[in-house]
Length: 109
Length: 115
Image (cartoon, rainbow over all chains, first blue to last red; front, top):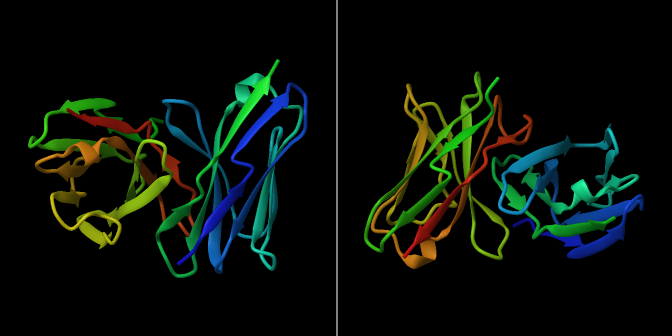
């Protein structure tokens, strides 16, 4: 059974700060997803990774398969980035997503 | 280019009633997943369906819960004889292939409150 751990649980940052959210998982995976959820809102898929690095605007996601670790970076953070960021993994040969508990990010002006 | 559509967005039921949650996947997507998010908890996988087939329902409670994805129309998650513990947000996601290869698109969720 895959365990997905995120850190930190809560993060408060000043506007413009560079932010890093970490995700570790315990068993081999076929894909890792980073998701964003605003309070009371839906879920938006930010990235799906199986190796290397992806960039979209101010967001960058990296994954290290050997270390079973992924990071989500936000450059020049903005209050509208305030949300819960969730890491989720699909196990090798599985359809099921296993989710981390999420990181609640608050960006203060 | 409508995204994944879920309805109702909010549903209130009394204990013992039935709840039906609907999910229309993105156009061209034949893979649908349902997830549950209990208050103050993380998301949990419930069921994975392809058109007319349940592929994996191992995350769904054995009793009172059922899901379908008919040839025509939306996928439906049905909860019979609801109890207070069923109060949660239920999210649907769709993809054009399995979640280990295809990007997932999520709906806005259906928030069920059981009185």
